[in-house]
Image (cartoon, rainbow, N blue to C red):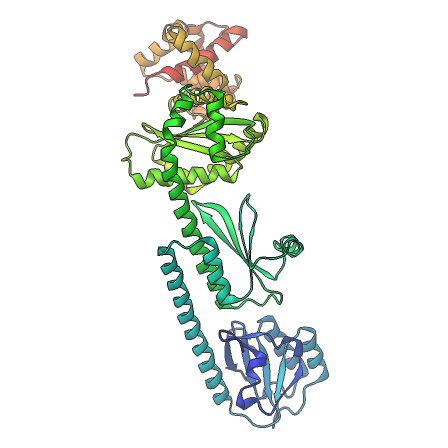
Amino acid sequence: MNQFKLKVKDVLENKHFKSAEVVAGEDGLLRIVKWAHVIEIVQIDNFLAGDELVLTTGISLQHNIDDFIFFVESLIHKSCAALCIEYGDYLQTIPAIIVSLANRHSFPIIVFHETVPFVRITQDLHSQILNQQYLMISTLESYSQTLNKNALLGQTTEDILQNMYNELKTQIVFSIKSREPIFFPNAVPHKRQQLLAMKEKASEFKHEPIFIFDQHYADLTLFRADGQFSEFELLILDRTATALAQLLMREFYIEEKKNMEDATILVDWIDQKLSKEEIYKFIVTHHSNFKISSGAVFILASPHTVPKVQEDIVYSKLYYRNLFEQHGFIPFLFEKKSYIIFILLHTKDSKLSRELLNSLCSSLQKAEFYKKQISQGYQIAFGKVVSDVVEIPKSYQTALDTLYICSKVPTTSFFYDDLHLYHLIYKLQMQVNLQEVIQDYLQPVIEYDRKYNSKLLETLQVYLQTNGSKQQTAKQLFIVRQTLYHRLKKLESLLGENFMKGHNRITLEFMLLANSLIEDKN
């Protein structure tokens, strides 16, 4: 008998079952028994939760075969463990139709040929079940203490899996995404392939996902050929997954400390102080035989209004590092003022790397951690994806430009390549006094708004965005048509009757974008 789970076949060994006989559903003797219940009514919906061993004298089943069928079907539907019937004054035999029904569902029906004390049976079984629960909790607590103790001694992944195997004596598979899975005990190649091929869908497996920083990072899996997993096994699976998650976190923190030593080289890299040979030498010391095909720079900027807590900074580094690694990137990172800067390298070409970054960004925007950071004022930006490691400084500069633009105007993208016009405006601003050019075109409208506290500039912007649709403009501005007509008439008087035609319209749209980028938000 398993020390932590009571099965129907184990119940048959109880002293009160000496006169018992299994008359149907013998294939179901491995069903788990979690409680014993005496029932003498047909309607059982509100009395059972599942896995009960049901005992009855059959007093409610003796006269009507339909009641008998309904009763057994209800027990099967409720996933009860078995039905025990005492032969006597009410029932002396089990109808063939009931035997057939039980056999079809592998639902054991056990009969007593002599009178048995139901109260003694329930007392014995309940004591047995409760003792098993207590023993299970004690063993589980001892197991958890062993894991905690070994954690202080610097246990490895293999140590944790060995402890787990010592308790369960069953096949374990530990798989980290993008890495070869670990089998414990080790399995021959053809057995590995067989297990991996069926692992995702087979009932013989139980999976426990391991999340690191809200990311699905790994899976711990148990295999049992019979597919019968006990509560104890599932609890051990859960405790072990937690221990592995803590070990992975500790490894991440150790890796973070090591990264601090590389910061000087990374700063020289983005400052164009390293030759191509020096860059490759640095990369191969961390990732030998890695063939770089593309790269980009990602910046996480923290707001000045949020106090910098070292734990939060480290957590952010680990969170984004894990996110990038999950998408196949090799991240190198360092801090610079209020920025955490990631140099991201990939074996894919520039086009495919950009697609991966798009996918990454989409999943990032759904994450609770990211939403919390954005609500606190954090900002992110991706630089231009480049095809050579010596062009990483260019990606860094474009990431800075993107960060500046995103801080000035509301955008739907954090990628340099998606902000074409804004980058053009930004570069023009470096060359000429754009404010003067903007005033040449928009000054009359800006001055009118300032003087009369009106909203002509906003009206012009929405009118252009809706391609001159009066209905959509009025709807977006929450004004009536007559008010819109009055504003448009005023815009014509300030900008000219042809402000919506040809180059006039293109120029106005450009100047509105430029004004939104360089105006003082304060």
